[in-house]
Image 1 (cartoon, one colour):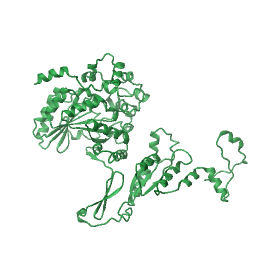
Image 2: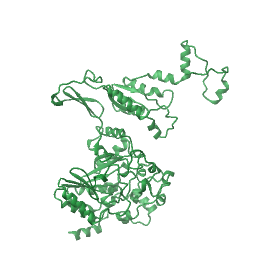
Image 3: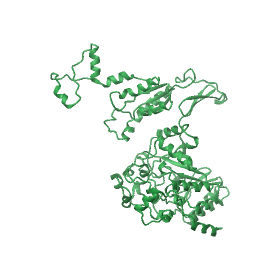
Length: 562
């Protein structure tokens, strides 16, 4: 049987070929003209021709100053490596392209921020023997290699991978790790990771799998990998034939952005799924890469089309030099809220933070359980609306009723939206410090939320006028809006939010559109004040330089005191 399989392998294409279209063809002809079709689709050829230094990378990309000034080992000695296939997906001119940011070293990696650490998850303290991390009672992480075909710049294990020989284990270390698992009979689940275990040869990977399958209390195996995404040629018929011998076997694949969903990747995942391997995705939330609902929804929908179930959305771990990748946790909650209920539940991953110091994965959810009101549970749906679920047996039979001020006579919590302009959002879009001088900071919004919630109200961050517009069009409503939005352009900028709320008959705090528009035009205010008979100093409106010649006010001009 093995001899027959080997003969089949000789005539079958070595890996996915469906995606060998104009993009791949153009890249190969331009940068690897000597490579044949078969070589390009051979995963070993891809590994041998990885891009591993800045000088070589500059042949493929027009590097920015922040990319070019890095050496070949950014992020505290973390090496660079990119497969030719994955390099073909990178934008050659745009350093801000999401995929390019994830694999090309950047000078920001040299900046260490508070809270960052070499081993932020405390894996080393939970490693009883080499290669094993035993944090959860019934499962272990088994790191079988410290080699990856492509190194992600935000890698949690940047302290380990890429800095030495391909294999972490010699024969004795492998046997010690297997012996540890065998001696702990409550371990039923083993996650095989690294590095990337699919960079091992079929023979070496099978040695690991067969060793684990001989341990009777190990019920199922998982493989954690990014190979189907960055090296889809590795998913050969021979590999899938070997893997299917070790069911139940699951695979978690690290996807980042919808641009990764190429025909080659679809074919690779199809081969794995056809071999009976359930596929799940693990995605890291990254600033400037996938930190918006649209990109995440496109990614999750695309994964379902290639038979990969969205599983985890990770908050980026605070490794050394990772601040430029990390988003506020609220951004992850916003994305999950933008998925849950707005698309199929299959497309909504669980948002988790892997707690620093070894606390394990902690799921983070948009608040859906509001609390109790007598015999009812109050629940918030995906639109932010409150619904009652009759639950008289809850609270151990307690008949207490809420006296929170935010609950109206109907028992529904008063829902208050908050409109504002967050300074950091606009600066990230390229606006200057001066243009955003009046905008708010994150701690201001947090303080407003806390004050309202302490009074018993339900709060909902809306943000700027564009967010308000899209949510109103989508059918969302609030009992009241707490408005501190400044707006950005024109004399009517502060009036934009209240004008919209007036149109939808939603009450709000502070001034109406007329007052806000008038008070921004100082000359018009003075005219109105003068019309009302209130004494005000003479004035002249200068709109252009030539108007200065027309100023006829006697000197010295009175000094405005305001």
